[in-house]
Image (cartoon, rainbow, N blue to C red; front, side, top):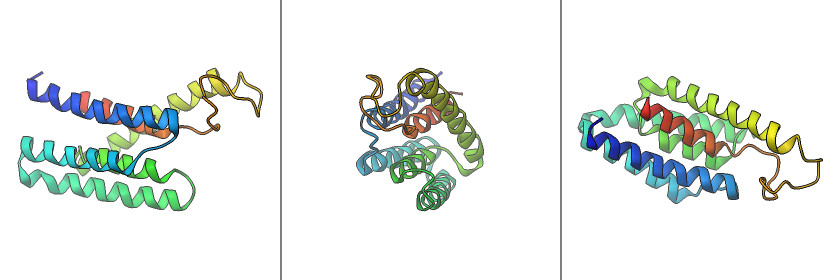
Length: 155
């Protein structure tokens, strides 16, 4: 693997890791982080593949944001999750959108099952588990989004 590839993976992993940590601990994905993720993905694409490659990446981010906002309006996901997914989608062209969605969904499934088995199931309703830090029984989907995006870039 070439050095630029490792730098790209490191940059995406760093941004995604910050998002995952913030969502796990605070159930928060700040707009600033989403902007940084979006701009970084577009800069990496422009520098690595040329300006002509930006359009499919922007299309992927735009479509992901539209779908995410519709899901947010329906109460299915949080607004931060929708923006974070769209920002990380900018790292990949639209042609790879289904694969990213699949990896994020699989990571979300693993995360949900792990939370149920090791955190929620072992604590009576209304009580807090130290690992949950008083958080509600919701899935911090930013963790799954981050994991799916990093897996997509690595594999």
